[in-house]
Amino acid sequence: MEEIEKYLTENIHLEPEYFDALLKIDQTDYVYLMYSYYNIRLQNYVPAIDLLKKVPENTSQKSLLLMVEGLIEIYYNNNQSSISLLYKSADVDQKNKWVRLELFYVLQQSEPHLAWGYLEEALKIDQNFNEAIYERVKYYDTLSNCSEIISEIMRMPQSYVDAEILNTLAYAFYNCFQVDNALKILDGSLAKKETPGAYHLLGAINIEKDELDAAITYFDKALELDANQPDTLVAKGWVLFDLGRLDEAKQIFFSLLKNEHFQELYNQVIQFCFKIKDLQQALFFINESKIKNSTNYMNQGYSIVYHSLKNDSNLNVLVREYKSNYSDTEYGWLKDIINEYS
Image (cartoon, rainbow, N blue to C red):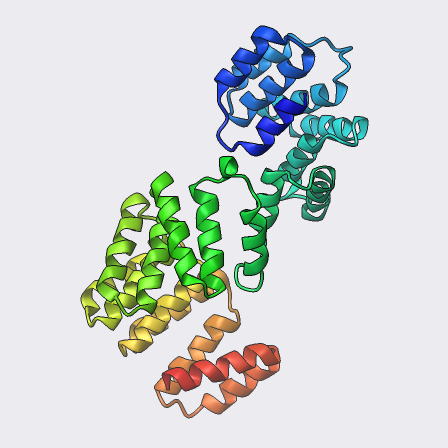
């Protein structure tokens, strides 16, 4: 049992051959259930169900049985039944870290506080539970918690670290102003797998080095892997603007809103319109953002910037109304953007 626990905990890429070989010498309920669980994790439900059938209801591994049964209920879209079985599994065995991790996944959207409680319980059971560690890391603030992210990932075994985790580590080094370490980690990440995240960060690093053509090359590599990368498109658009390639930049910014309508994307497009002094287009996107995202402090603020650039005699009234409707922090933001674009 300890060997299987260690294998599942320390390896991010699991091999079915491991369980096949194990079953030749150890046909216990525990092995059948963990092999079934492994298949569920890969969404291979048919073999998971077949393996579950080999385990009697009166098994001594009651917690694992309930957990696997609960996860299979998700396959049948019986979500309430699934959660009920997972709760029972957790109650039966206070040391079952796996069911607590699964409860975190199941509850993180509907009951986030409860989900986090189960994640913390899993980590109390096993402080080296790598999957749970990484789930916690993903919710850290990447700027203020960059040191914690580095510390958590650096203690993971190499067998658990894949390209995604290395990218997270590279971003943490970058945010902690350790660019050389970030570059070393990115080399390791790309050696494992080419990913948009790695190429995006290389582009950002080259912007800081004022190597703008190289930055565009890396952003293009990221977009070749996944064309639907708004952050990369925005970054490339601003580099093209800095290089004076305005038509190319305009094509990128004006295409950003075809599929996504987040306020932050509108902000970038509106700022670009201000930069190229296309006020009518800026006003169009300001009004559209109010339709898509309702009136908020950002699109209302950009509306005031528009009126400022148009030398509107009613500007002071608009600013006073804004100050009365929004917080001091938001009012401070308004003053900053008026100063930036006026």
